[in-house]
Length: 367
Image (cartoon, rainbow, N blue to C red):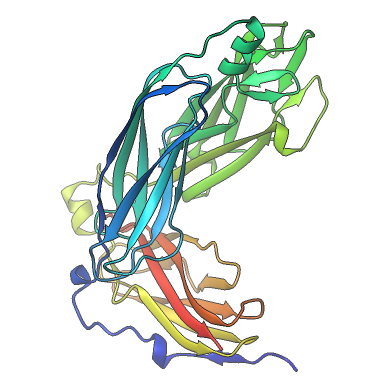
C-alpha cells in the first residue's frame, strides 16, 4: 500500500499572537571562562563544561560552535532546549605538543537574541621531559601520516566574510628516514593548498598552507571540506591521510550606509515553531512557512541548513521582493522513525542584516 501524503495546513498557520521581539530564545551561561591552571603536556586531554539556561520564551537551538584552533574540540546539546531548561557545551583541549601558556576562544551561535556568544579557556602546559629526539618529534607533531608529522589535521577557519580569502597553516615534519614528496591534489575550486617545500629531507620541517576563497564558492553558512595528503605520489583516500577544513561564510553588514540599512530587507517571523501534531508512522506530511519581506530591497535566501534526514525543506523561490511573500515547503517522512515525540530544527540564512539566521523548531509525534 502506497503511503499517502497528508497535507497539514491549519496546524501550521502562524498566528501573530505576540510581537516578534517578545518571541525569542535567550542563552545565559553560568560561566564564560575557564582556567585549567597548570596541566601536564603528557597528562592527556582536559575538558570543562559550560552550562547554559534558556531564559527566553521559545526553544533555544545551538546552531554551531566554532573553536579557534584544532587543538580545541567543542561538543554541545544538539536538541532544542525549552524555556527554563538547561544545556551544556563541553570543551576539550589537547595539550600534547603545546607546552606553555594558552588562551583559546570558542564562539557559540544560536537562535537567541544574542546570536553569538564567546567563551574562552586558558591554562599553562607544563612541558613533558624530552629524553630523546623521537619523543620530541612525537610531541610537536602528534599526527602521523605515513612518516609525515603534522601539528593538526583539522583547519579551523572561523568566520569567513563573503568575498574574502582566509588562510591557515599546518606545520609538518618528515619524521621518517627517507625523502617525502608531499602534495594535496584534487581540491575544490574554492580551496588552494600549497606545500612548502614539496619535498622534505629526513627531519626537515615545512608548511601546508590552506586558503579558502569565498569569492569562488556559492556556499553560505557552515562549510566542511576534506582534502587528502599524498606522499611520494601514492594516493591513500582514508581518514589517516585526511585534513578537514571547517569554517562559516558570513555576510559583513557593518559597512552598510544609513540608506542601505533603511532600504534593507526584513524577514517577518510570526513564529519560529512548527507544530505538526500526531503523524501516523510510515506516512509523509507536508506543511509550509510563509516567508514575507516587509523591507524594501529583495530578501535573498542564502541557504537552508538542515541536518535532518527525515525532514526536507524546499523554497519555491530564493528571492522575495519587498512586500511580497514566498513559501517554504516542509516535508516530514516518518518511514524510518520509531514511534514517539520529536523536536528537530533547521535554519534559514538570508541577507536580512538584523537577523541573518533564523532557526525553526519542528515538533511532532509519530503514532
